[in-house]
Length: 286
Image (cartoon, rainbow, N blue to C red; front, side):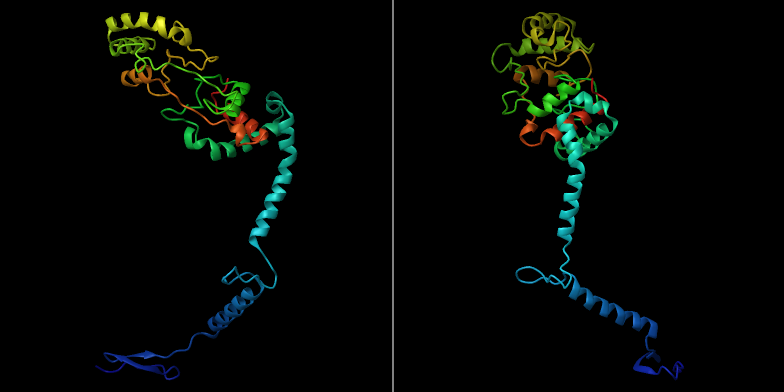
């Protein structure tokens, strides 16, 4: 095979494969100049900015620049900018905050951030709730959905270690022997009938008497619930722990003891008010 003709100006590297020679063409000068410039730039960057790790820290650079310092200063400025609004929130009652458009918008933004950091792990990012964790977007409120009621719940919690916490105690009727398993089953059937979901008419009739004797005092004679006691409405289709027969039997037998922290021990008064405003705005507030 004849050798490939080469560029006389470039020459070859001396490498040859199957009669094909490798040209030794120099890099374009413009490319080399850019390469040299980036090397100079890198050396200069190392000298003036923090760059190299050391045993006990890092090289500070001639400028003494610190990104951490910049972030701290920016956060301090942001806190100063928010301080005026947060002071107004602390000094204002909830109705006044809601009536002030500027303050209300600020509270909504702060409440959304606080909700994502503190409440979303249980109630969900969209406040949709799940089994055992209330949906904050509907109209079913155990303790009331007004601004003041929501604020009270957030501030003092549910079954929390707080003297003003919300606290409801439903007996574990089956576990304590107050009702037999058969009576629990009948009572559950009657509870289902309150939302037109019962299937056994005879069990419903027996359960009606048991319900009146044991449950009506808190949940009401028609199962309408009582927010003053934290007793849920049993006549709708909204259930915190599930509304099928198995879940209701479990609730009557062993009771439920869901809890929520008293956030006044973790958040400042402004953040708690912002949370109340935000939760109330989700659509289920009363």
